Image (tube, rainbow, N blue to C red; front, side, top):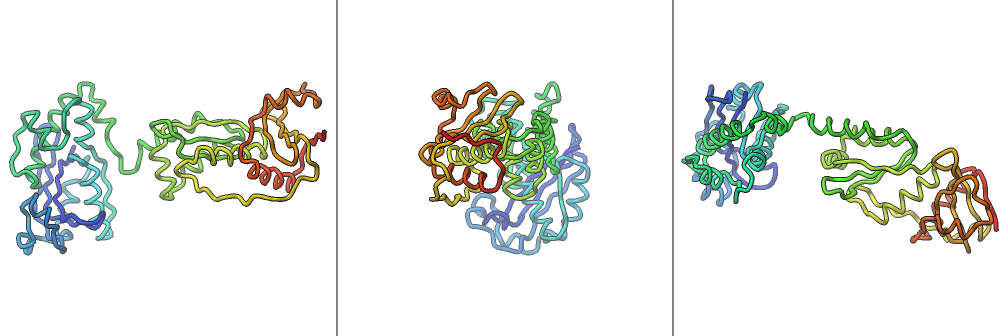
Length: 359
């Protein structure tokens, strides 16, 4: 069951708009089975451009019911339905905002006929309701009034239902109020993440890295991010398309790789707090730090020459300490040597290093 809805508002600042007119048609996929239409007194003035667009003015609404007086009827007619609107994100947001003001948690699954039209009727010049209906031969009256726009949306939605031959596109396009599709996406991603130490990269739909994280257990760290409810975390959860990762094998490599990648990629949702660089020299000017690698048969190496961190990388266990030229060819060079020096010095100060090779 669906509720085809159209809302006219006062205009104004985001989430400060008020409803001036609402039309809801309960629709079973074939016919209208119930309806509710009403002007609404928004208890605030209407923006002048909206008056010109809709023809609804403040005088018309003086004796109209206030939202709290029609709220019960809206709840009744939209019980157990999916909201359908042309630009459903707007209508859903406006309704939720009005109910929030009453202290009522109004949550509904929704379908957007703009998105559905792009999928089922491609190559149209415009997907605005007026131009799309004209192109498709759908009659319209009372444009920019709730009743006229809602009735046109019903006819458009009927056509979209017919065009969805396999009955999959519309079902897969439902936006669940509990973010079910986002949760399914995240669970699918989590299944691919291993439980090893490393760095992970969150990519958006365009493949761009929007967040970098690290940890001793990659799956656990990604899961923590997916469970967070902060504004930043919710944005990442919504935008994530896939997650890639690299194993590091030890904590020092985890830190080096993480901070170097942050500086290089500058992901949108990472907080970039600058590390205070150290001016102190190492106890020895030339040496190699040897640590546990990613696998049993390899070592991790960090090369320091003339008190500068030159690079880091992995070698197999048969590597000879005298093969410095070979080692250098295998290392990932470091550009920000001051940053690397700070990370390495802090690590040496607070951790036991398995082996230091001086030369």
